[in-house]
Length: 82
Image 1 (cartoon, helix red, strand yellow):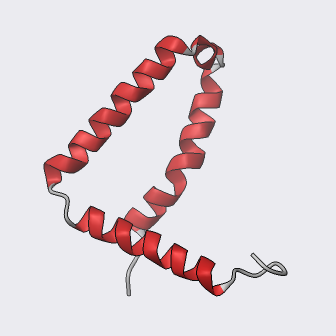
Image 2: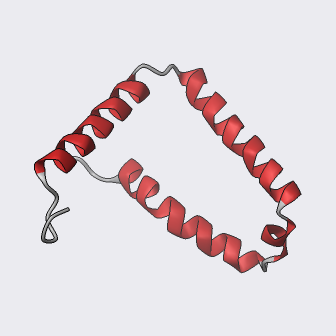
Image 3: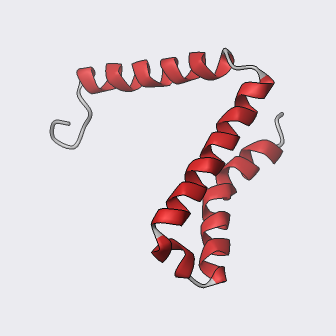
């Protein structure tokens, strides 16, 4: 980043990452998405087991975090396409 702007090398890096992710997702089958969800769930259980301070927060923090994290995916899922 030079002078608050991303240089050409940075643009190429971002393009590479985006292209790689699009290719990765487009090569997945329906059950691969389910396996990714299951693996995230299992890692979350592991973190909850070993980092108990995460489980001591009041319930409304979890609801607030859910709303913040899920807002964009729900927006993109239900956006009206012209």
